[in-house]
Length: 228
Image 1 (cartoon, rainbow, N blue to C red):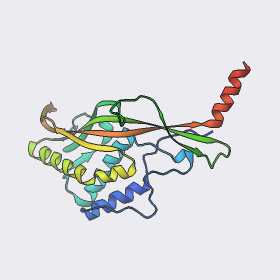
Image 2: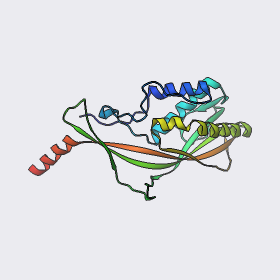
Image 3: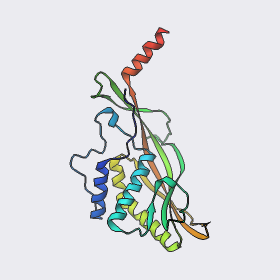
Image 4: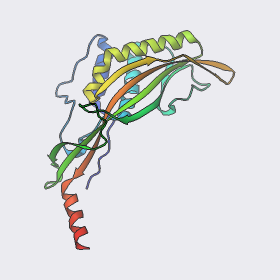
């Protein structure tokens, strides 16, 4: 029986990022691109904070390669909120400030899994796949760091403009909402005889987590339980 694993590498989004960076004025959707794919059960994926962060850094790297507008900036999601090291000049970091259940239509936060669809698994005939989803609200802060305040400030402003312009790219992947919250107070850190200047920008990112339940597996489990 297959197991569901979230997928973050998608050639469709790579094509979309490159075309977006080249046009710098709009976006185009590749032929046959389905923003909410419902094919084989194992290909069904949610769009949670991990997928969003991966796509964000892929987008920024692709944009930088095409335009060169972020001079000497490194985009690395692995170091989270650490300030850059000696071998870096400028960098963008992020941190998760808060994560909680998203409010529903009535404004009430509901921790329950909601049934989204019931599908047939074409790879495993006879198995129905119940697709459950649960929305989350994530408060994420992106901070541009530099050894001089001017570059850190300019990169933060540029990042803010890019997100406002290209939010639609992430929504095509399945993101529910990406909303600017605030530009927080500038920060300063001393490291290895250098002063690093940081300009943090905070966003609310609404994502969806997906869980697959195989119906026939549940039937087998129930039979086994009743025989003991």
